[in-house]
Length: 233
Image (cartoon, rainbow, N blue to C red; front, side):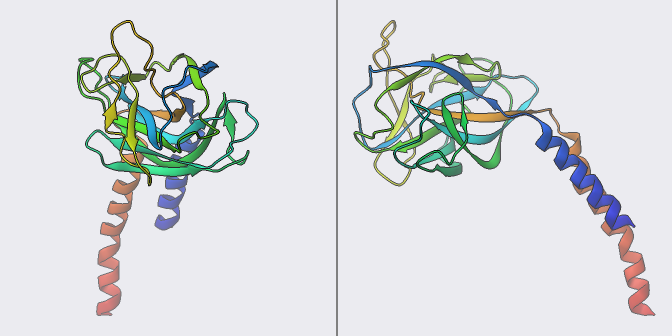
């Protein structure tokens, strides 16, 4: 009886989380042919969780499909902590297999929790997201332009200044630890908006996530005396 009660509560909590809608970090409006020089490596951007109280669970990673008619190549995409630790990655397959949402094709990942605390703005970024492209890649001939970010996402650089493009050179999903220094008033080095992600807002703390392991622990503690009695009998 106790086992069933804990299992049902677990399913209920997980169902509640799954019911929350995924929100894109930003939406696109058009694209530009004013591309930075092509190279082989990762390109993307860094961000903060612009919230005082809520965590951000990154649930999907995506790349831009300019025509919405399918990707010419597959692309490995990852999310890293600021110290270079790869937190999660996936591959966006070629073609139209990955779902298209507002110009981007997404694949799910094991959720990555980003803690709140974007104040002051000059604080270091929380994470980077980037995808791997080859030099002259047919999927990277234009630069997406965006309408704006979701209110909880703040793109930033190392020192908290306005968003800049981050990149890594090479193959095998290199860490995008280098960034373009964009001169004030000069838009010639745009961030790499070819990469996007979706997330869910998670209240701090998530009571449902904390409750389930606690109840399971109590169940196991209560079960020990009866198990001992059976062995002694």
